[in-house]
Image (cartoon, rainbow, N blue to C red; front, side, top):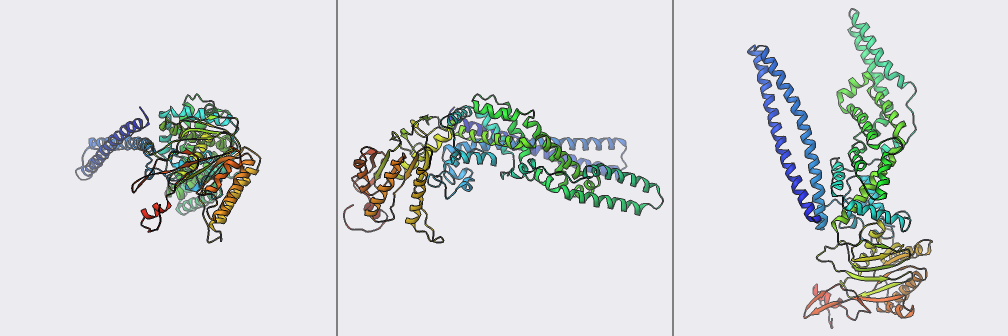
Length: 603
């Protein structure tokens, strides 16, 4: 089955499971009500009708049956939550295939950065973005790791590190059951993606318990028991009993306050880390083939500490910690036995044993979840090509398309930048596809560097740093005009090209369109000349044909290409096909008339 059939079959199967479990839960609920009604009737018979011992036996049986149904109902509820999470995994897969952006999570806005070299221009984050198309993560760890991959953060060793990610993503693309299990295990967590940083800060801290608390945890409850035993044998010892209990409560509450920060950091209400055990278990038992994934799995099993076992131990302690959220237990029963202190002692022992490894385990979880998202992207787009990684700067694509455009509307074009110091000057009428081409080049470069397949029939690409100047925002508050804002963006691209490292892959849309034609040509040509002189490669779109003179001036370092419209009578259409040479038509006046603006002259 293809991705659509796989997701639809999975959605139907899990939807049926959810319906069956809901029906079972309703039946159990009805049975519990009947048991309660029967118990009330028996109690009434025992009290008013003086029923014999058999009634007590029957009442005990009803109570036992009720307790059993409560336990069964909890298991059914958990199974339903898992089925819902699994169904959501398949529903989101279908939404990604349909580019149904409103049915997909849109949580990547927070990764937008105004000073980033390309993410804002290329729609990497936000609504209808590359992140929304790719993201199948369920935890903050995975979401943040995926954002780093799509932002091209860090200097990946070329081509080895990218090839290792390619192999891992290929491996994960074929493991639909694993990706479903990973997403299901995470999907039963709270809707809000928990921040693990407070727990990590606690796990890596070295603060000790206040001196004497460990002794007090045993001595105070023992002394309380002894004191109560003594006063209970005395005549008129009621007031002394109250005093002993009051003193114990005061001591217990004061001790609890001393350890509260540690307990809050580890509490299940503060972090979902203790509920990631099932996700880590799925990773530990999966027979990966890619070396990168095998290495990540081994990190969960190395150091003499299995991540799942230690996380399970932490979960048990946290379960005891969270008992204090019951008000009666927190203010009465807990302080009498110094419950919080005992929990803090157990947490401190766990931290000494495994705390230093927790960050590494969380990193593994985030890495695998991010790679699994890209694996899902590869599974959903089997026609996308796996790029060939070249040791030299190059971008040679066949049938390159924009990955955010649906398959039935996408048009692919051949794009060739055969080496460093090469550029395309793209001309064309309005709405013909110039900006889309530049974004297609940039987004596919991002996918290639992340290790994912690209929206093309074939792509050969070398090392480069992506930098763009496309969407320009002025600022009244900061007193920045549109033209000056564009100059700052262009300066950023030039500064990156001047730095040591791989060449810059630049994408400049409507360069310097905020000034007059003469100065635009002079300035744009100067920018392109310097970029090419510094070994950069890329593409520039423009309406100003004066910039196309660079093809003659630079002796083949620049190639002119164009898009054009097709006119039949009053109808104007676009085929979005890239052609060699310079455009010889324009459509601005025709478009003005199309929207109802009267202008004289010929279109």
